[in-house]
Length: 267
Image: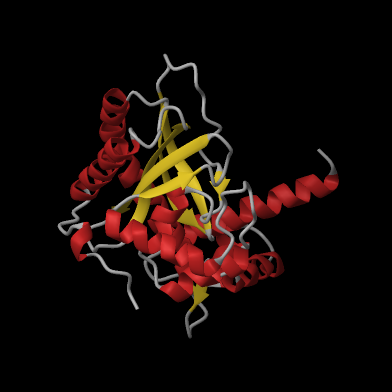
């Protein structure tokens, strides 16, 4: 390991140690407290503390004591949500695979304007393998799972994501107009499911539905994909209904008591 690598590794270790000590403290810790406990120079502790505070991982009170910041708490909250959703979804996903006879089923969340896959189950006997993996990030405008994730967001927030991420044309069927995309999301809200009709990949059709938490907020989406032969116009209604009911089943486990009929796009 080079000298630069060693210094970087030491800085990371010190930053993590600082976070751990502050997390264990009821009243917060000062720069002096931390440098003494970690046996490091105050200047080194000060540099790390300033950077962690700048990024909202820590906050400093009027007495100069550091406590955990909102950014760190939000990361913990998001991680716990992912675990809860995956645990609630697993048996439903297994049941969906058996009933649908499709090659795969997946779960995704919205992260920084992208759909991020957090769980996937495959039918091991299927010779069709879809190009999806845990951690895979895809646009919201080309995917059924992306549409399901953003359909119930305020319109301005949706447009903000489109401005940030753009609307790349992936196939001849890709929606590249913000207004057309908003109309597409209106259909999602009315039907309770979204469809990607070869909009992300030629010859592949996907169906997805939002998952709501107890407060009525969309926290994830449940979806499936296969070749168009497996999800043709005849089979689509039955598959979409099974996707919608599966997503709602997970929502119920998470405490949601509403229905799509009562969900509206917030102003």
